[in-house]
Length: 435
Image (cartoon, rainbow, N blue to C red; front, side, top):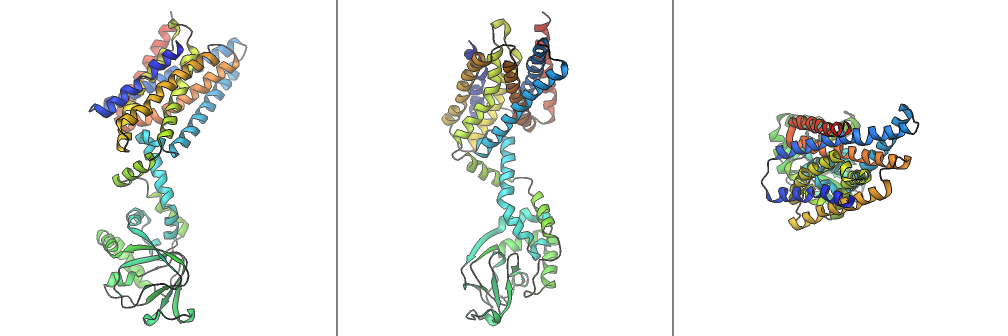
């Protein structure tokens, strides 16, 4: 019977997945339903688990402080376990289930991907004197170029096609267009990591004034002429800054002085706090590729704690954990609907989505049965702590997934159904206890 309760509670997941796939739905009503479920779960956790657990401890001789510390330790441990496991699975691709988790994951990925490039730009005298807030406009324009030792990048007299920044290695600046020169003594300058060159011909429209040759194996960052022109044309301040810096320094005397490199990199990184549609779509596809198992485990992780408690507290049909069951059932509908929509964008077929969410039903059956068999409704310390542990995980789920998704889809309006859900669950609990 406990298993059937788990099955019934989690069956809303398939209903929600079907809505997300086949029914044109308004996000706001589902967000309000999710908020109502979150409020119900908070009330159920506070009364049915935390308070009743503390009462059981009090009957065993514990004072208020000790009972609170015991129950709190269980809740805290459960929240930490859930949160750590959730973050791990999200890094493996489970973040594509929910829009808020995916956005957090995608922003972290974006920061990590460009962090090294920003550090290099921060050492560049030319780039570092540009406003750091402009970095997001510059990064997509950068491509990579590799030179072998002795290879000539361009000769004096060539037309300017790009601005270059040394990412690794060194290049030599040769006068009179003499790439055959072999000794470094004939080089008028040697440019290392962070040094920029080539901007003068882009600004003036004239030919290259020197020859550039790799002194060793070298990696360059390249900003093409078209991208450079667009950046300059779109921002007069940017154009003035480039012109000013370029005319103030000679190509043979570049340095990394001026603005502090670490501070520039910090400001530039902070400017990458949002995703454009192209970036989000690309990362969504990449994250979802091969992430089916992570998504399955993420769904199971969200299901097990609540069903453990439902099974543990079940003794007879007159003693059901109605508030907890109601919160999980109602919450499963909009959660699965939002997840199905995200997974569709990530390229999953309907059959695969139903398969992923059907694991929730199996997890609910097993978890409820395990809760009944191993935790039960005993007043033993182990049982009370186990229920508190599961309760902490459910509370972490509410804070980590349910409320953020509800706010994302429904806006500030969701505060009202959240309170309504709390009060409704409180009424059910009081009606049961006052009989």
